Length: 314
Figure 1 (tube, rainbow, N blue to C red):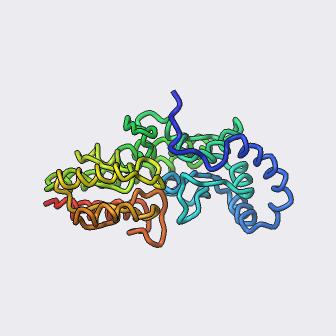
Figure 2 (figure 1 turned 30 degrees about the vertical axis):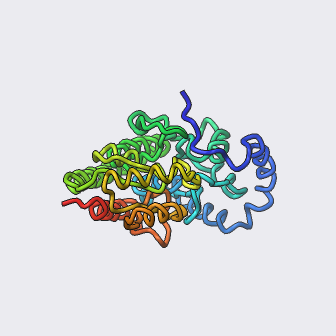
Figure 3 (figure 1 turned 120 degrees about the vertical axis):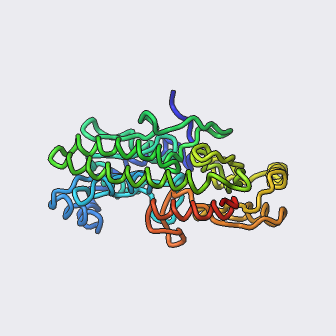
């Protein structure tokens, strides 16, 4: 059963697919002069395996598993909301040349439309189709796909990435599997740190800007209350805000969590109306200059520190 999209794409799938035809025509005229084309040519000459990822957590897994043997391109620019990613003409060219494509069907509608054009020679790793990666976290808007916020689910995905890279590039298969094992060990340690750090807390209700933390909450016995649903740009009604405020008071919540890529206005509204503090909890959909770390692991550790303070954990 196909997973539902998290939000309506900014233009119809039909229009987007039509644009691919125009993009393909433009590719020949622009590829030779583009800086990215020159970089890709250099990486190809160096024998690197070309990999395209829909957004940051997928790209990070590929970079860690692939190491120096791969060239990873992220379709979502730093600071951009990955749900809204609209692939460019250059992105079409890059994806065409990729041996491995990493995506989460339903998370990026426009990227889904582009990936649907992949050839049989390209290996597409759809996290939504990998057993054990996507959990059963339904919301009013669809299934929560933020699997990387549970290190155990992310570790399963890392194994799938290693398998795809090894199949596409057998000479480096042993290195890919060794790199994956090293990353999985770090994820086990991260999971242990979360389990220990969130074991004893004054409140187990966490109020977030949007419902991105279902995996984290389920893994570590927390209850998520989202101000918005899966769409971080959704504007909650006055009734919904009042209900969140009631939940804050009833659970004696002292901290409301805003995000790095989402508008904090409604989180601030709830915090102000309830007397709670405002803190930043990062769903790690991308790394920006406002992120509390430079990569997935460091931001996850920063999130743990934020949660321990916000949930009054001992």
